[in-house]
Image 1: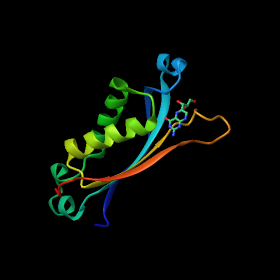
Image 2: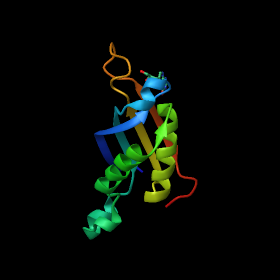
Image 3: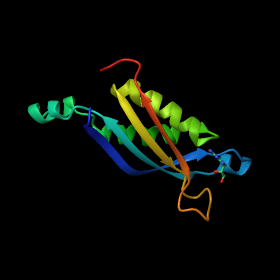
Amino acid sequence: MQDLVFIEGLKAQAVIGVYDWEKKIQQDLVFDLEMEHDNRVPAETDDLAKTLDYEAISNYILTFCAERQFELIETLAEHLVGELIGQFKLNAVTLTLRKPGAVPAAKAVGVKIHRKSAVTY
Ligand SMILES: Nc1nc2c(c(=O)[nH]1)N=C([C@H](O)[C@@H](O)CO)CN2
């Protein structure tokens, strides 16, 4: 499968970090997602219900970040991707998660994960 639906540069706020001071503040996170999907199916039907709805998925991520709290961005990434696969029936997803303010000398630091569903949708 070559087709993707993607989300690039989605900015969210979350309580995230290993240090005590980080548990009292909101910090910026930036999400890039590449989600495998056969885009021929929605293209043939012109039907939003046959797509991966990038608006709905973006809103899910923003709500997830507002409601959940983790120390490591690895943990946030793993939990989020697990939920996205289940909620939106994703076959495979690559998530790049950046924490731009974490290392002032760096443009950004973060993690990238690629996960596949245990079942094929
Ligand atoms: N691989 C990671 N390294 C670090 C993380 C993390 O989540 N994953 N977090 C921190 C601190 O919370 C840092 O962001 C505070 O500025 C350090 N290293």
